[in-house]
Image (cartoon, rainbow, N blue to C red; front, side, top):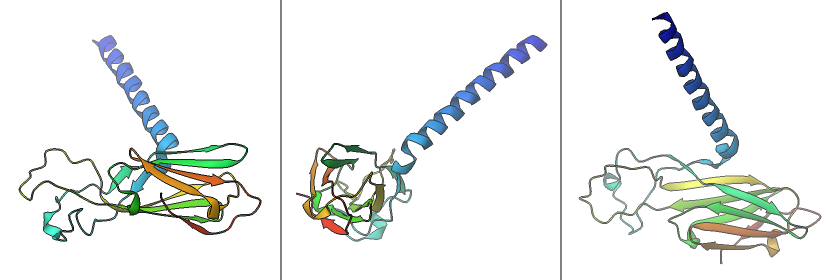
Length: 166
């Protein structure tokens, strides 16, 4: 009996180590992607009735991104599904890209009952460090298939700039 308890303890320890490793990797690889969403102020259809929002609306979601660099530019891609390109406000502050947005909550009718609610809505912001100075005035941004892409030409000095999503 002691041997079987010892074996169960060893398996539990192994399972705990795997779980801890998974959490460490999640925090290391996507810790910056975990983004806080403020409470939405209105639905996509313009209805501002606060009671229409589900009580347990999530406040956190992942906005996964990537930053790549070539000899001439820095490219930032950010996954932000379910939004319109006009919902983004993008600027450069020093060697950081600030992406602000608001994802509006949309529902088909007021009598829906939720059984699963994992998507976050509301305003958010992501501050993304850039590998060097970029020319924000010459930057180009686009939004397609739920991915915001910002192309930033490299420069010698950084300056604050606003970027329009086209």
